[in-house]
Each structure stands twice: as C-alpha cells, then as structure tokens.
View 1 (cartoon, rainbow over the protein chains, first blue to last red):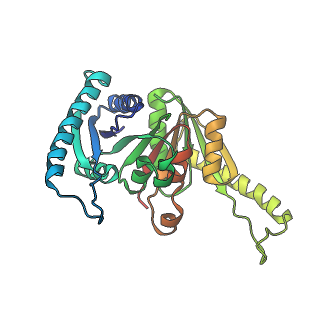
View 2: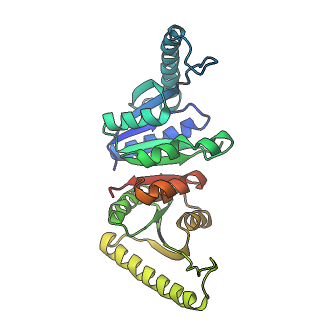
View 3: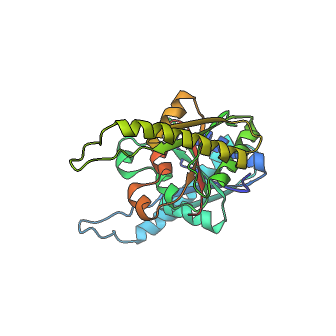
Length: 146
Length: 146
C-alpha cells in the first residue's frame, strides 16, 4: 500500500469526504499523510495589464497565508480529529504547487477532489485533470457532487 | 473502503503493476474486482471517407473479441493467479465503454494506468484524463513509466 499520501484540500463542501478517503487509505498502509492547501494567486492588474504596485500585495499575502493556516487547522480539528497529519499552506497555482510538493516530499499517492466540469471548469479543466497528466505518482480523484 | 472495483486493462508493459494496485485495494476492502479490456474500434474507411463494406469487419470483430478474451485470460493467469475476478471484453471506444461498465455495474472505484502525455497522447489526451471528468465514481490513476 501507499506510504506517503498528499491530500489537496480546497475547503469545498465535499472536502471532508475527500479527506475521509485519504485517511482510510493512510490507515490501511500506515502511511504518512500531508495536507496541502494552495491559495490561488491572482495578481491585480492595472489598466495596462501590468501587476499593480507590490507593497499592498505583500501585506495581503501574509494575511492570506495566516488565514489559510487557520482554516486548515479548523478543517483538521473538525474532520480529522486525532489523525496525525502534516499541514502545508502556500500561495500559488494549485497544479504547480501540488506537483512541487509531490516531488519534494516523495509522495506516492495524491488524493484530490474531482468536481467534474461545469461552467467555467468545463473551459478551464479541473485541477484534478490538470495534475493527472504531469503527476509523477498515482492520483486518486475522489468524485464529489457539486 | 471500496466495494466494487473496475480495472481497465490495456495489455501495456505496465498493466501488471496497475493490476497489483487494484488487487491490493480490493483485498483491503473485500471488494468485487472486474477486469475490462476494450478493443479499440477503428473502422476502415474507403477513399470517400465512408466505412468499407461491413461483411469482413463482422468476421474480424468475432476474431478480435475471441483473441482479446484469450489475452485477458492469460493476463489473469500470469499476473493475478488465484485472485477471483470477473472478466469483460468489448470492442469500442475505451472512454465510453469504461464509463458504460462503471454505470452498469455500479462501480465505486475505477483503476486505470496513466501513461502521461508523450507523442500522440500529448495531442489526444490519455484515456485516464478523458475518463476522469465524466466518471461518476472515484478514479485511481496509476502512474506507469512509458
């Protein structure tokens, strides 16, 4: 069974049921479980298309990270109880940061919610599908109802 | 854990390691395991772009199915030993037939090899990625080296 499992947490309504799957698989193999939440970074552009002055963004990033850390901690407290997990939070692009952590931590299974394709996602593709093709390890896409 | 697992078998070099994953997960949850091999149907077109006369194809289909059934049986004998599995073979489009069987058999986990995207697959997309967005159940994409 898998030894190092990464769970990508997006705080959607279904995130808890995705997390339960990861926990059950981690239990079955005695795996180390890491939770990752990526705060999507969408730089604010001015009218010329350049990013706005950076100073306010730097402050915002600190606040965003702090807030995301708190949200992840309460998610763990509420849904995972006393399961031992490592928590990571970063600001970036979900696909790229998930793949970075998979590489850094030698993950052998990525667990991620798969929301199907509706509305915008139908055009952009889901993070699960985007990750799938470039992920060096196995991917468990847990189907969630939107 | 999962109760009904479908393994999509493609007879690639890595199919055995993908199958091992499916067997281990089936064991962990006492799941029923079904193996499906889809023979891709590529109709022969004449110069006008119409499919060629059908009679030879009907014979070919019977031979193709018979040959695929034998291949699947020897795959099971060689790599799964005494594991109890159901075997299915059909001619069609991998994505559509996998989704059909998932629905018919109320599958709750689809296990499929994920070959990444190289060459043609980079343009066409892999079956794993194609299935992911429309599959009503969880999908475990097992990464295989090409």
